[in-house]
Amino acid sequence: MLAICGGTVHTVANGTLKGATVLLDQNKIIAVGNHISIPDAAERYDATGKFVLPGLIDCHTHLGIAEEAVGTAHIDKNEVNDPVCPHLRALDGINPEDEGLEDAVSGGVTTIIVTPGSENVIGGQSIAIKTRGKIIDEMVLRQPAGIKMAFGENPIKMYSAKNKPPSTRMTIAGMIRENLIAAQEYSKKLPNAARDLRLEALSKLLAGEVPLRAHAHAADDIMTAIRIAEEFNLQLTLEHATSGHKVAEAIAARGIPAAVGPSITARVKVELKDRTYRTPAILHAAGVKVALITDHPFLPINCLRLEAALAIREGLPREAALRAITLHAAEIIGVDDRVGSIEPGKDADLAIFSGDPFDIASEVVNVYINGTAIYNR
Image 1 (tube, rainbow, N blue to C red):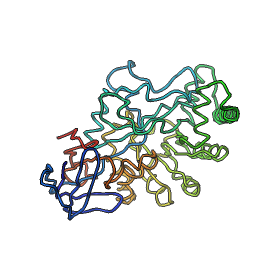
Image 2: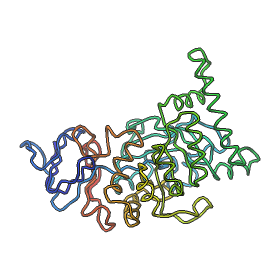
Image 3: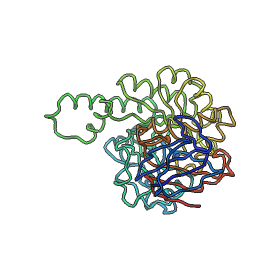
Image 4: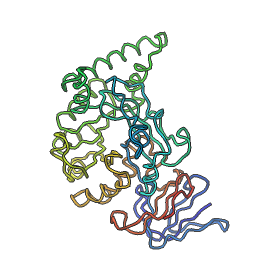
């Protein structure tokens, strides 16, 4: 049993408590507050002057399947010979020894989504994992955590060069519709249909068991993703939403969440021409549930709180920014019963900062996952 005492505790769900205690037992949080009875046998951690947060969450990365510093040996995020791959699982490509996972931990990030890349129309199945473990199967929080589809220029660039479809945005939408209709017909024939892994994966999407995670930067691509989701009654999360501020009211009216970012990037392609650090604030003001993402390795994952700091500078309220990298991200992933806030019964995933977590001079000093100390600066 461990008592983290005297810190400024950002519970996220129930406000900020100064000089409070968080009590951990086994792998769970069992109490949080200012007047907690601490058992004599409990180990004590003096967090006076420090800030105690739930472990941070990034709900869009390619950690472990776009491994760093290994060249092409472990770049497994895109199957570049087939534009439609709903049956592929990020789970089967993740290397838990990716050095980026160490960066995640040192940045206070304890939960992530690993998602296939965006060079296919349907890239495969995302997975939610904790950021520390020797065996990927033991790190899983949710599998699958969504099916990745990409709208816009990335699949067009990849397959036009191969003289294969898609070569237009119309073709992307048409291919998605064709495959969803095939999955509808497959579902009608169950349990007598011959097993088809592609259609089986899409059937889970149609049944609402997993969300569509739509890579969409430009406003027109965002609206196409929304249009298809409405046609097939799909649960939808917008990923990147670089121009989401242009259609914020339309997104909000439909109750669709947006995982925004990375904003710290150059305008390296036309879809990023409207990039602004104000997008999260505009979406939030319209009523959209916002998370912030790094898209690691495109932005290193330990810059997640810097994304939040810049969003605050451009008008996103501090509490909303905190939720964007904790509880809202957990809700978007579908794991908020386990992580995202400091509450009794949730996993003991904590990040302790030397100062204000949105001050980039503040250091991550300690990190716990499942109640185990995994980082000490």
